[in-house]
Length: 415
Image 1: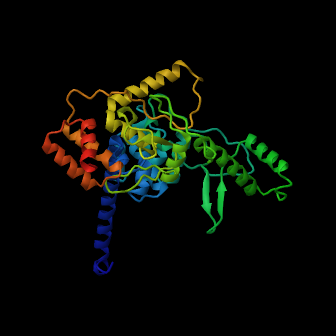
Image 2: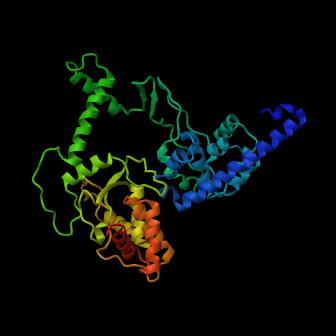
C-alpha cells in the first residue's frame, strides 16, 4: 500500500485495470483446473469425499464460493466457450452461475451473447424474459431459494440438448444459523403432513411439555430416532452370545460393528499421503482393510469406516476400474430384474468382488506400486515407510501386481 501511495492517478488506474484482467484470467484458470481435478477424482486421494468438500476444506472457499465454481466448471465441460466469457470479463462468475441451468446446444451462443456485460439484476430480468416461470402462490411466509448441496454431484447433467430445461423449483435449503454459543436458529420448509404430525405430537405430549415448545418436541423425537437407529446398527450395547458367521458370509456381527464405530468415531477413516483424514460422517460403510475377497478376516482390527466415495475408490485401487464398473452394472441389472425385493441391511454391503480377482494381463508396474502405496498409508503406515518398502520390493523383483505387492510389503513392514 505504501508503494501505491507514490504513483500517479493515471498509473494507479492502469495498474488496477491490469490487476482486474489478471484476476479474471486466474478465475478462468481455477475453473479449468477444478474441471480436470474433478474428471480425475483427485479429491479422493486428498481425503475429501467430493469436489465440494475439496473446495471448502483444501482450497479454503466458502460454501457459496465452492458451489459457484463447481457449477460453472461442470457446465463449461459441455460448453468450453463459457470459460472464454469469464476470462475476458464479458460475464462475471456469479452471472455464469445464474445462467448454468439454461444453456443447450441450440441456445448457448445466443444466451451468452445477450448476457454479456449485464449485472446480476439485469441477468435475472433476461432469464425471466427468455424462460418465464409461472406465478407463485400467495403465502404467509417467504424464503429465498438457495442451491441445494445435493445439486453439486449432478450438475454435469444440466442443460441437455432439446427444449430449454425447466428452472429448478423454488424450494428453500435448510439453514442452521448460530445465535449464541449455545443456541441456533434452525429453518426448513415442512410439508402439510409434517405440520400435522408436529401438532399431533404437541397434543400427545401436552403434559410432558406443557409449553408446547417446538424445539423441545423435536429434540425428544430426535433422541428416540437416534436410539432406535443406534440399536439397529450396533445393537443394544448389552453383552450377547457371539454367533459364528457362515463360511463365505460378508456379514459383520453387531458387536464388531459397534466396536468399529466407537473406535472410528463415526467418521470416514481414509487418510491421504499428508496425514489428513476425510471429514465425511454420512453414507458410511464398514469395510475390510485387507479385502474380504483376498481373505481379509472380519475382525475389529481389519474393519474400518469408509464413506461411499472412498469405499469405491479403494475398490478401484485393488481390483481396477473395469472390474468395479462390471460389478456395478451387475448389481443394477439384479435390482431392475427384481424391484422391491431388497430388504434394508444394517450395514451397506461392500463392493462385490470375486474370491480370486483376475489381474489384467500386463498391468503397468507404476500403477500397481502406486495403488499399494495408497493402501499401506490407509492401513496406518507412514508414507515414507510405505515408499521405502516398495522401493525395496522393486529391487527384489516382486511381481508388480497389487495382491503380491501388498502381501510382501506388509511382511516387510511387519515381520
